[in-house]
Structure formats: C-alpha cells, structure tokens
Amino acid sequence: MSRIGKKPIVLPEGVTAHIDGQKIELKGPKGTLNTKVHETMTLTLEDNQVIIDREDDTKTQRMLHGTARAQIANMVVGVSTGFTKKLKMVGVGYRAKKQGNKLVVSAGYSSDVEVDIPDGVEVEVNKNTDITVSGIDKHKVGEFASHIRAIRKPEPYLGKGIRYVDERVRRKEGKIAK
Image (cartoon, rainbow, N blue to C red; front, top):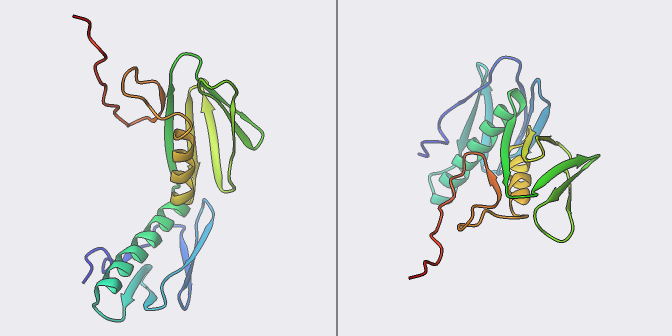
C-alpha cells in the first residue's frame, strides 16, 4: 500500500467537500477548487474525512494513489489558508512594480520585462524588491513564482538576481591574480 495514499484527508473547519464519482469539489473561506482523479480511484467522504482507495496493487496504481491524495490535500490547504511564495531581488537598480494585471520587472536588461499575472494568483510588491505571490492553487502559485525567478536567476559570483527568500545561493570565488 502507498503510505501517503492510505492516509485520510481531514477537512478543517469551514471546508466542505462534494464528491461526484471521480470528481471532487472543495469549498472553503478562500474559494473553490475542483479536480478529477484517475478512473481507477474511488473517493468516499466519511466523518469529515476524504478517503481514497484504489483497485489493485500494481506499481502504477500505487503511484496514482499517492499523487491523488497529495493533490487533494493541497487543495484542502489552499481553500482553507492558501499558499504564498516570497521572492527577493538582489542587484543595483533591480526593481519590480505592479501595473494593473501586469508585473513589470527591471532586472538589468535594456528594457523592462512585463509579465501577465494569471487568474487566481495575487501579486504584491513591497519596497520595490520584495515580491509576494499568493493564491489558493499551489501549482499556479509555484509556477508563476518560478516564472518570475527565471527572468534573472541568481548568479554565483556576485549573487545578483531574483531568488526565493529562503533560497541560499552558493557563491564562487572569482579569478585571483598572483
């Protein structure tokens, strides 16, 4: 059995689930999310817990079982508390600002980089260099944060670039004259 897959998902206060075959819809204080699990998985709702079962014990079924459970657990966290990713810009003249539904990033290129903010994701810019990406969908939040980071990844010699707040950049020593 998949150790992750057999754990029941406990629904916190304020979160409700509606199961219709392979489809599950979760509603909470932050919003609503829904997904469909693989046709070999069965979803049941018992005592404010979502339980996922599978047909057989093949390797593929075990993988799908754990994945389905993790996705639904992330949805429960998303509709109850939400997800945030924080980024920091390091470098002279590096800054970001929010203009309507776009994020404008100045990261050392000849022109500013404009990025459209997707639906379901909120962006907040503090002190021109601190960017906070938040939302209820873990996948969208993480993907958009990595898209912002990819504009100018941190480089190892001077440490300049866009990085996650908790990211540690390994610094290299430059050339040394004898």
